[in-house]
Image (cartoon, rainbow, N blue to C red; front, top):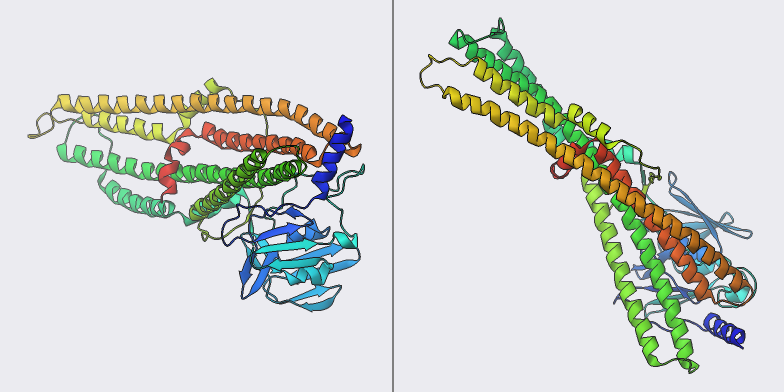
Length: 510
């Protein structure tokens, strides 16, 4: 009897159409394909009285395979014996090499190719309806039998992973991390200023060195001592300018790494937010069916509706955060704010095995900040060595001694800061690795549960909602793991060059 109740509920869940759900923002266009509300990072738009919809999201949901040629900016879609070809910016498409006139030219918005809605019915024979009042596009090809009936309950396997979400896959460009670093350095005014400063300091050093005939070992001729101290300071300025330029580039390298990986994380957040909306819609559908069959009250429907509204707000925020992440990286690499591209480099997990004590020693000997601080100590000691007691108005000798002490304290402080930074970064990496291991352990159980839910569904012992939720747990954990790997990847760069992380805020502001 219990099994019959599960099967009855499954049939009700999978044969009833979604209710007309509230919560869409005013002006948004909703797309429903074969009874399932779609989620796209770029919503459909109305341009010149023509409704344009995301090509890949719609076509793949209707069973077509889509390919993108970034160089030719051409889209090819195929289903059964039909092949469709579209070029970005053109009002002419081709179906099996025969031209099809479009109502409007194809275009790219936020990484997705948009095509006129009527082209869907022209190319795939799907039934398309546009409701102006509710601003809803309803597409169906179930009547033709060309697509899997997603609302039918049977013992056959699901046609596709139930947690699949349509996401931006069309880009005007792609971007590797190395290319992003090169672009950021080329666009940085700090780097350009640093290069000019090196040239300037070199010319000054050359001029200052013309009158230096020897290196004084102690105080002697006041004019010669003064000239040599000036030369020593100029030489330090020249070397410091070169070192500062190197540090600026390293800071930019770190900042690009940080923003690049954060952009990957924001993309994951949008994907998960879209999946959570579908989960909420499925739960609302179940709640409505249970209420209609006197199996629950209106309270459960109200709770499910509120959850859907919250999830829709979460998706809106995730999209805004993703746009902000693109803008931040674009600003650093010299791209236009609206430019979108595919990120080609995704960090891969590998156990962090560096020895913290060895790294502390390496950092203290290779840090540009420490080198600069030590040079200031040498310069202060030189001034003390060449101090002339007979020169009237000179700074008191004791004050010059204190300058040496101050420079030494500053050097010691810099060393302590860097040592503390290395240890802190190391501990943060190890903490993230521990989280990653916990997620991986949980994934084993989640995948096992998802596999069991799928098998139960195949024999009518589980609903599609239960399968979806089991797979959603897997997807959520997988993307949480990806986010942790991205954070570790950023920290690894900081571990090797902690001064770059400390200087990244200043570098990114230039």
